[in-house]
Length: 524
Image (tube, rainbow, N blue to C red; front, side, top):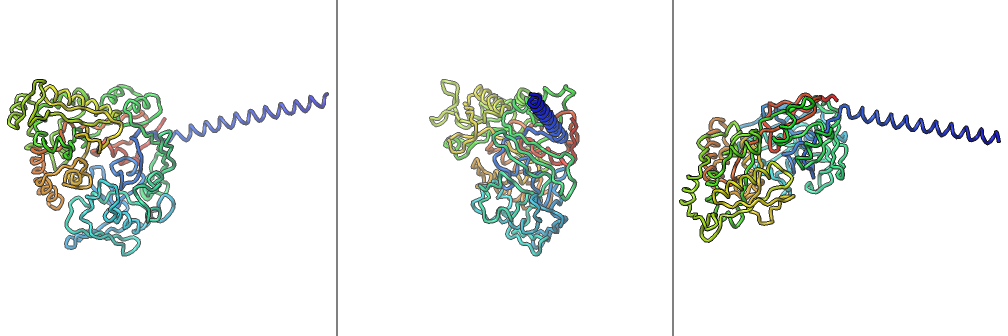
């Protein structure tokens, strides 16, 4: 009996010890988890499906995972990055890049000139590449590597924006050569040379984890880890900040306003080149017949009321797609102001007459067009609905159709768009030149084509400014986008975040906030 009790006692002591050890291990693990989060930035970002600078170069993650031959400084000017230096031979229209010798891919392989050659050949020779930026590289005639740390890129003519386009991230030849860049699994498991390394992508949980690149060739970031949460809904982003599920997010102005007087948070207001407007599909049956009547719609929109009502005053009235560019902003292109009487006069000149229902008609057709708007983008939905209400009052029926995803083949007449030209004004070339790679709305105007080609191939800055001013005037007469407003970029984060620099003009969806992330710090 005593022996049995002794055995039971021993078992109890053993179980208790194991239990305590288990609790201790769990507590230690929890403490370790908290310690891991102490230098982790949780960012409520945008939805993602691929991370590849050739396919989605206008988003935040490619810029911190990959590096380009050049990069943008605080003022949006290209400076050397993977290249230590470069030479330009004006007579031969040739760039020679002298590459760094101390760069490794995130998998430990050496970065060499072969990677640059591979990347630019993909951009210029792969006809299957599903990219909106290939028109930016159409002047390249050859890319060669005379040695492992020298790249020579020849152009058929001078291209004023070429250094800007050399900021595009370089891809690893050893991982992608011979594969389909459009569909390869690399796009969900990217390997770059940039400041942060990809760790994992929890698609079910909507979470991409990155860690700082300890072998980065320049300043290694202070923040150890970034957890990028893929969030579409704007309400959700604000709720995540309030609940502590996120540390930083770009919010629309209405949500950002709710945090401004709370000492637990900071707000940063960036200038952006990000505009909103109804982009018309010039290939739709309606606009094929009525494209001459897009510009006059500006007269029926009280854009200041849209800014005050939807954007909390955080923006400016838009009249040009390069209005916030140093080489844009030609006041002579600002030819429309809110004026319903003038609108009615101009509509009459165009041959439109109001029907019994108050909607204009011409040639037996109602002035009715459909604009698709993604339902989760509250700011765009509000802008679209207010535009629709104002136009309806004036006699034009703009139907707002809410969709979860843009469908370019569903027969809509356009979409509530956002674009930005935050760097060289040539960024609009691919969007507006006839049949260019980013011209999703099929806009075509020979005078615009001529102006944008001339702007691209002119060297003198003053001459370029004059050319782009002419473009603005031409485009204002025959626009493809019913512009409304340029947005300010409102970021909200916890009080312990420091280092965000508002010097840089940000892009579409306020992309570019992480341009100096290596200098950021976070304290909880």
